[in-house]
Length: 393
Image (cartoon, rainbow, N blue to C red):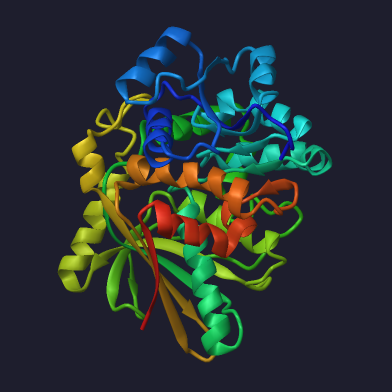
């Protein structure tokens, strides 16, 4: 991170739905923290003023006009700050110039990206520049894919302590979830498939479990594309619509940690549907519903659930580590808000605070946040962001 900046954090996209939630969180949670210097940024000064006033952010909070289509405005923004939190997606369309500018200038970068082909391109294009400038570039700092990345990390740490070594097989299972995924996530998925229609090589990346580990391909991974019965949990499972994002980030996390989970690591994610014939039927219903997620009911970018809906949401994730001799360890991650908005906005904000205050020694380069900050990030998310990490019997 740059040593002397006017701001510690700039929230870019603060007039969008999720960006507003990030700004609102910082204003509420750090209102008595005189040491934290932050600003709101977006395309329209009038809209920034309106959002600032409507969400209760202090009137003296600095506002910065910046536009993804205007590289000079992006450079002027990042020249003032040590880090940028961006919610401006799809990143495939609006993130290229910002990542390039941050990597070149030594400005830390945080986003909510789940666009695997774009992330791969950014890794290849900007790792060297970030390493040279001192920038820490971190993708997927929200529900894609932080609770899953850190859940696997906790599961493997538990295996080391109780079994004496990491395990080569971890199962990620969504036990419960209430809430919707964001309009930005839907727009990102649409952007990827539109780009893949023009460049079929992108589909190869989308399907590759090791798309985010350039130069490394591990063992065959479970497909996770149809309902199956899990003998370890004695329940039916159904495909989890975010698995194609999260599994790629977790394999990258393993690689960034020096293959701490082994080069033969196998990981999949599925959603628990329940036991028996009823569970099998429910698994099929959930799969059919998820196949229709791109329909008219999906929020558009800038839209989202009410405050009541966000605050009544939650998620409960189970991670089962299985050793070669059959012994198991289990860990869970739970969140106290809907995953796509309420919890995500807190997570990305705390990622930026954690790097600033708890983990300033993280080396430069393109990271996953869990691999970069590990236990320090878990502690901050527990202390501030409503997450619970537990080892289960």
